[in-house]
Image 1 (cartoon, rainbow, N blue to C red):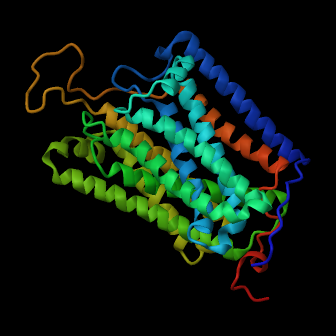
Image 2: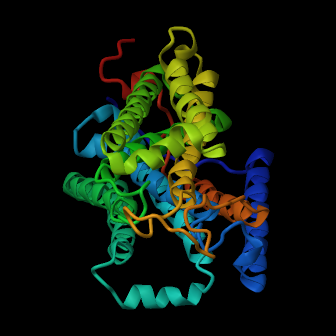
Image 3: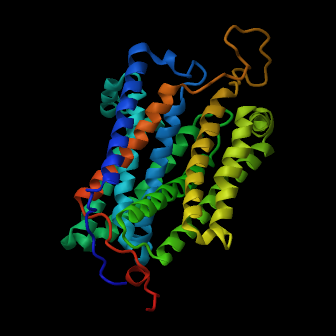
Length: 403
């Protein structure tokens, strides 16, 4: 591989300025939606006493999980010494920080009392998985920032590998912590499973790489920089492996639950009797988010078409949001088993009934605002600093390429 040169993007075109304007407008609208929820209270949302984690949490958790996966490209170059991925490492680290920042912005604004975040940051209850995640999120920002410094400062390049290994291990801890939020909630039949941690790790690989591939393809097309077939094919095939991995863990999760009698109720709810949740699972998560992308990635014809591969990556992102919706919202909508093994004859609190939830426009706008924050951070950073190689042509990045 030749010595790859990095350069800021020009950023003077009408398209670039229009992109910044659109993203800025989305952020302003999202802040307006937050103000409405803050001023009137969360009763204007679709959330209630049963469903306390709504659509903003879907977007937030998706971005947080994807942040870990976006760093995977940098980890492949540093930890596993794959030189073909080295030119992409800077953009990988930038995208990881931006996605985490967007996700945490949603969480902070959805608290209802953002000022109470100070309590979470100064008082730690180490019996709570949420306290662990505060440390993991802050640590991720710090270690990835140092990792980027090691890569971008030529005199510090020799330290990039050990810092990259530390970042790799830390992001595994971060995603394990995020998945364990649900795995530790034994009161919810849809959450109580040790497989949640590896499932979330697999989802992070898939979601993060799908976003990375779309950002890479779009930015190089808009700036007119060459993106060779070798690196494109590697990323596309790797994304297919990750999508198949997520599908495997989903299968293992449901088969394990079906084996245990206590989980037959939640399995029947999600797989057969859950109405909108069942439809979203089979059509959105399995078909749109898994099977169709795999077809687009690996079919001899569609796998060579960059537009269709980009569509497949977009479907992975859509399917990922649907997967988290089914998991998080569906898991809350299914009734709690207040008295295991007992039958509740009469209750005024809707015990034993499926909770109703419909996302409000305010929740959706806040979630989209977090996505816009992540994208505008990337758009501005690549304009100011040298994150992107001037060329990813085969002769520049493929060590096996012959002219």
